[in-house]
Length: 67
View (cartoon, rainbow, N blue to C red):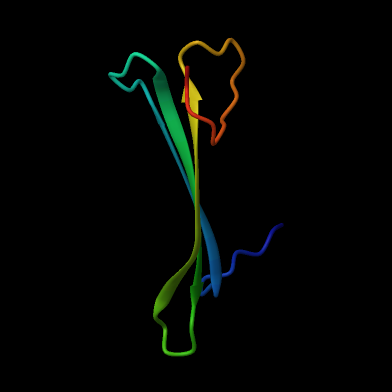
């Protein structure tokens, strides 16, 4: 049985959005890494974002601009 930390100091949040009303961008994915300090205040450490293009046949996300 896995133990769940009910008071984590670090968390990662992944947000996936699809179905954009855009002729080139299909969706995006964002990874946010947060850290809670000794006072209990959450701080964002990193935010990474990549996009998925409509014209790509593979399910790939990239930081490159869509054609």
